[in-house]
Image (cartoon, rainbow, N blue to C red; front, top):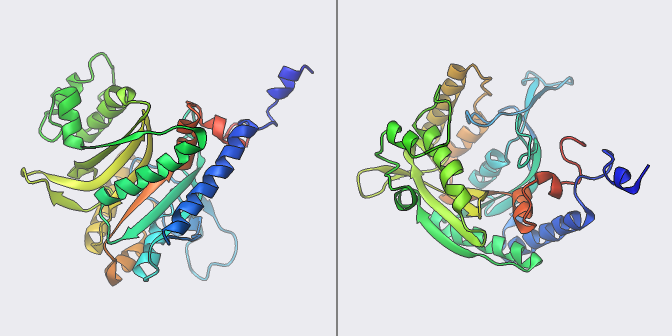
Length: 332
């Protein structure tokens, strides 16, 4: 067998050794960063009796064969450590983070792997705008490992669409949003307003983001609130207090000024499950433990989840997630 054929053998790693060593150095930087700020690393369950109800995220499930004492046998692989971390916050633990593997069904390709590494952390007494600064600072510390830097720019979601597309994402009609896609042809069947806004982001906006710019987009339409608080933007429109951080075209992080209202959170879970039912998709059970934790008294805080594999891709100027994984999905 030739040396080239041997190098391409499917038993071999998908990433080169330099990328794997860079991942180890990045993990060390992350842990040192939070140790300096007294943010404690924790480990939470990978398997749960509840799953993620978000209609746009698919969870893996499995059947437990042992003794359950009446508990459900169906368990769900976590799509993020968010819910147990919030239960720790409600119990009074304080600022904390987790660096670990998460799992999402149906996501495999150039930029996605069904299992990947997520960093998620929470800061008591902070809002999403303050957390933007810390998130960007951590990314810049990571970039320094490869001799790079990036400037931070913060922009409101509404202002971004106005500046770059000449439309108001809060008030424009769906027809206007569809027309703004230009020559991008999309089957409109089943798409709603937020789908068109997302398509404009991925097809018209993201490709134009500067390679050396950290762009923090904040204050999203209320319909994209996820687990964030809502407020009036002062112009009669409710906005979700959340942000997404991009380095060039790659989305690295998603943060929220966290919702603390158990009743509202339960209603959002129910709306998610209704959307899933309408689509004919499996609807994981609500996380009642989280709702009980919120009801017991959840502290004001902000939290953010960051894709470590995406960050490594950006650091290495790679468009393939396989280039930063020891063994990607095709070789696992």
